[in-house]
Length: 291
Ligand SMILES: O=C(O)[C@@H](CO)OP(=O)(O)O
Image (tube, rainbow, N blue to C red; front, side):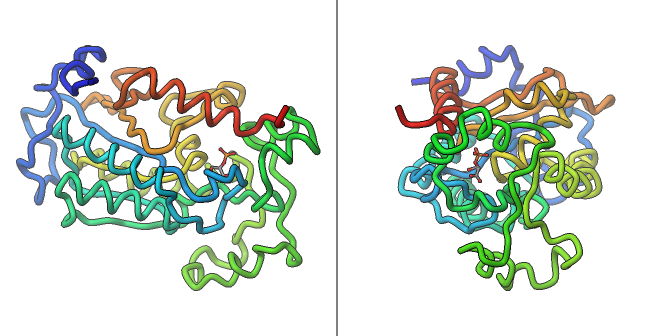
């Protein structure tokens, strides 16, 4: 069993330096004088029904699969074991992220914290690819093309047109009645376009809360999180191609209280490294053609 203390030792983090208790949870609006570092935890939702079928999902509102529910529970137990507490949580408007957050909240006994939902944390819009099988798409267009669509920084997938089977379901979904406004409602998104709509929310809302000393949990999606990771780790457009985020495994950044810079240059997963590696490789192979 990979215990939280073993995990913290592996990361060479002194747990005493990180605020973990519920102290000041309700009013935790200012940095405690004992607090040496700030922590932000992010997690990609648990596996969805469409992940399990290996379909491009994007803004389609897939539910969590039974495995995804277990992954969300596991994420909750990991945070509970490590005694990590939060003041505020942010998520997208998609069920797979909202439900993952609810499961985590229940397990860590944080049902009462404020939760903010924004379409800006949604998965990237996969355009015309939405609903297609990734392996079959790789067979048809080649693995390189699918890798470009899935992981390049600025190559967008083809646009979703009104005759697409999921167009109406997404465009007329009442949750988007007010936001995003029609003029910017996406029909496709590269990672660059995804980041351009996530970044204002990250900088003007989430980052401000972190700066104030609030302990923030973000439950979002593979690509909205890749955008934030690119920003946090200063990755180049080429480097972000190699970043794949597994479902349901929380990762954290510890930030220096004064400089607000990450203490470790890369994200740290809160989980058994072997499990993280295998889960990450599985995400990569979703884009491979079936042999
Ligand atoms: O299909 C999607 O919406 C995303 C995440 O599930 O997939 P990918 O990992 O291919 O970007």
